[in-house]
Amino acid sequence: MNTYTQVWAGSRPGCLIFLLDQSGSMADPFGMAQAGAGRRKCDMVATVLNGFLNELIVANTVAQRDGTTEVRPRAEVAVLGYEGISVGPVLQSRLPGQTFIGLPELQMNPFDIERRRRTEIDDTGQEIEITVPFPVWVKAKAGGGTPMCMALEQARDLAQEWAINHPDSYPPVIINVTDGVASDGDPSELARQISEIRTNDGHALIFNVHITDFNLAPVAYPVSSEELPADEYARLLFDISSEIPESSRQLLRSLLNKDIQPGARGIIFNGDAASVRQMFVFASVPATQPLNVNE
Image 1 (spheres, helix red, strand yellow):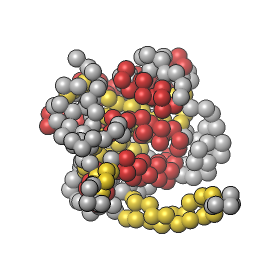
Image 2 (tube, rainbow, N blue to C red; image 1 turned 45 degrees about the vertical axis):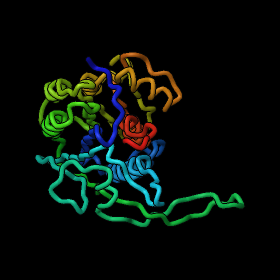
Image 3 (cartoon, rainbow, N blue to C red; image 1 turned 180 degrees about the horizontal axis):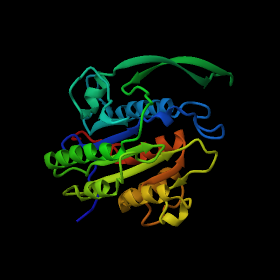
């Protein structure tokens, strides 16, 4: 029975597998009316993912009685990049050889800490720029084709092994961020195989974010493929995206402050940088529920 009610906890961590399209078209900029306007798609996706991972770490950090803090191991993360004829881990840290990395290990082992400028409002209401530390685990990359099938095949194997080792956890969640059509075949069968992977809490989920440089409104979480453009690729991405579990649908309604219909699929089509972040946050909701001392 699929319940999708297991909250991610230290004893039952969640599994996030990110698939990043790093093909040549990811070097193209977002449209000027989109979030991320004028910036290369690969740069913005890397920035959004690094920022999200840091937010996820902060959300799972708790104060200890001795005044220190502890990052709870409530999620294990893998990031695969795909371009040309290759797929491989791109989660860079000082922990070589690990595909999955837990939140405490991520927090302690960024690949780099950059100094970035951020605009804030001071006490007088004036805008000021401040420099803040920005942990980096994923570097931007763009070049080559779009071997999405190969990426899904590796994600399937990772998710299967993880589910076997964590039978009582929330099932693996795979988030695929792409701006193009698979260059190595039809991903439908691999998506079906992923959907058959399960833990005692439900089947594995695959969500897709299709990003573009079009100045068009994203189509987010449609119930029917008829809501998408009359485009074969749009319909294909809809078909391989998982239906949003009921428990997650209620949380998504609260997150977006809008109605999400039963049967909605986990896909955003014609998205931008904001769409990528929205999907990351939604996919990780089980890891940001209130902590208790036993988690």
